Length: 202
Image (cartoon, rainbow, N blue to C red; front, side, top):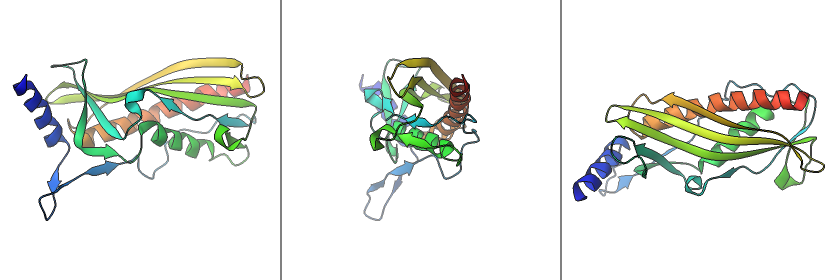
């Protein structure tokens, strides 16, 4: 057991790209999704849309960058010790969704927390956001999200769908996980908003 724990810690430390400050203290690398907008297009429908507060599984409510060693202990989630997100994944994803939705000035975008209502309410729940390490030299990112479109007036559900996207990691470390998770997220957002557009038009 001690050897397994040491190997897992060694992978996390090496993959996190750790560096040491002047006093020997370890620096923590923080990541977000960057400043570039995703290539997704805002829905073309003229209906106003309200974005509900995005929810997430309990283990995704921290800024930890998570990975899973499929070849050793697939039921256990690990976190990179010296790398983290600037915010919880659901907050980062919700921000990118809002950026795209707000890029269409001809249509209003509200938020439930602001008391602004549109014809439809978009509800999102993040179920998975992690790096799957298949071997010491191969890994992939997995993002899964549930979405629902409801009427703003009575909150009756009009449509729902589970989205899942995977992307290969360029390296088996925290930077590789960040790169692939961002790519998978942007692909998922494009699929999500195409689905929302169809739902708003119906």
